[in-house]
Structure formats: C-alpha cells, structure tokens
Length: 320
Image (tube, rainbow, N blue to C red; front, side):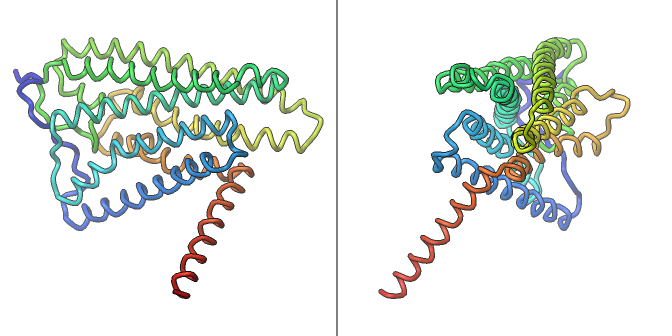
C-alpha cells in the first residue's frame, strides 16, 4: 500500500496525445486566460479609478474580479505549461498548493456572491436603510468574512485530503488537482473522513444558495411593484448579471460534486471542470458589463483617456 508520504508528484490528465493538438489546447487556453486577465483587469482598474463607482456594489464586484483572477491563475498556467512542454507532472507540494488556492478562492467567490445578493436585497427592498446596513465598515467586514471563510474551508479540505493514504497510484484524471479526483486515489476506508468534510461544506454552501434564492424572490416582488418602468429596468440591470453569474457558478459546481458516479467519465469530468473553473472567470466581466451602464461608461472613459494619453505621448515624441 502506497501512502501520501511515498508520492513525490502527481500526473495530471493529458489533453491530447499528438503534439499538434497539445499546441492547439495551449493556444486555446492562452486566449481564454488573456481574455480573463483583460476583462477582470479592466473592471479592477475602472472601479479603482472612477470615484462614481466607489459604492458597495462595485466594491464587491472588485472583490469578485480579484477572486476570478486568482481562481483562473491557479489552474490554467500549469495546464498551459504542461501542454507546451509535453509533460503531465506536478509536484506533491504544487498539487497541495493548487487544491488550497482553488478551494480558498472558489469558496470566497461563492460567499462574495452571497454578500452581493444581500447588497442588492437591501438596495431594492430597504433603500431607506441602505446607508446604515451596507456602510463602508459593514462592506469591509462582509468582504473579510467571505475571504476568511474561504481560507478556513481551504485549510480544512487541504489538510484532510492530503492526510489520506493513497492506494491507487498518482494519476489524477483532471487537468488540475481537484479534490474529487484525488479522493479516487485514496484508500476506501479513509475516504469517509474527507467525505464528512465535504458534506459539512456543501451544507453551508446550500444554506448560502437558499439565502440567495429567498433574497431574489423578495427583490423581484419589490421590482414588479415599482410604478416606474425606468426604475424596473435599472433594478433588473443590476440584478440579472449577478443572478446569471450565480446560476453559472452553482449549476456547474453541482454537476461536478453531486453527479452520480455511474455517469462519470474522464471526458465528461474534464468538460465540466472547464465549465466551472475556467469559463466563469473569463465571462463574468462580460456578463457584468453588458447591462451595466455605469460600468460601461467608466470603461469607455478609461479607454478614451488611455488612447488620448498614448496619442499625446506619440505626438510629443515626434516633435522631439
């Protein structure tokens, strides 16, 4: 029986056997990664530089963009490097770091989405109390609670997962170190320890999901009672992107962790893992900017200023 102390590295899932397909996967992932960096980077810059966006909603959106950047940077760079250099190896420490960072960031993101639902609920259902319930201090405390909860959850699962003895080799059937795939390598009698921790975390996440659903039930009831169509449009424009992100996040994560083992296959697991770990960080900036007039104006102002400064710089250089 091999245990975790005798494993010095893990072997990640290879995307393809031929060199041409490996390079194709590298190029595809590089494009997605650059799009995620650009989109989330623009949101971070716009929120930080435009004083009109210094509100609780955009503060939480800034936190979401940071978490998206961290999440996609935890998984894709290693997958791209493996595809480029035609290797599958990741060190034991690197695998543990991937598990810790991914669980930390993905959990903190989910809690941030929950806090954002509360922010929208207070803004629409209790507008007169918004300043007192969602002030700057309350925002900082809620953001810190989301990040802190993610950190504690990551410590719990990383410590539990990597304390399990491994009886089934070191080949992980995924393009990054994912807890369900590592558990398949563990001994059957030790599996229950991490399963218990997973049940605990899933219960908390389900509680957050119920809170989000109940919040939006109240939000939509309040919005439909608004006499002004303009007010309804503005409320929907701030709520629907958040709801779309929540749906994308929850639906893909549920498929990963709650699908029956009988329908599990390496190709299906790979597709679903890409959907919940790679796609959301790349498309979240697009979802939030499509219907958000204030954010689009801030981004346009930011890009216009950059183009203007670049033009002035080139003109000055030409005159010199």
